[in-house]
Length: 116
Image (cartoon, rainbow, N blue to C red; front, side, top):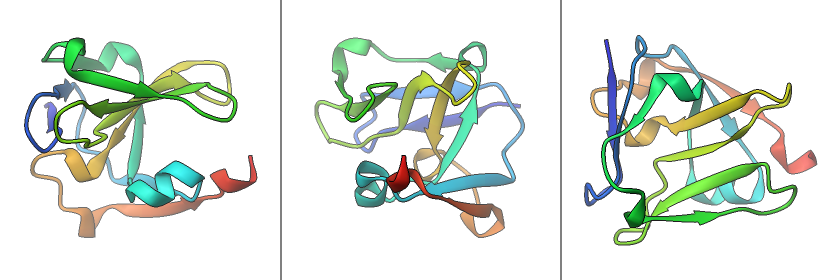
């Protein structure tokens, strides 16, 4: 099974080759709090960008370990790439940008990113 996600205008689209997640985190860091993201994490080999990186703008802050990806057209942030706490490469998917996910069925765990 694959998850399909995109930004609002569709200039950024991706698939993740996994079963739908049952868990997500809600981070309270300065950017996630403002975006309202619900994040699920995957390895880069599970993620396939279906559109051009030319339509993506990248933003980093603080320790610069996460590259927040934004659409240059609509401003939506459907995913981020970076390094997890254990040093492993990861892709964070904003589940609010994934088709067919029933967010009411996702167990959401708060994450205190503001303290990092």
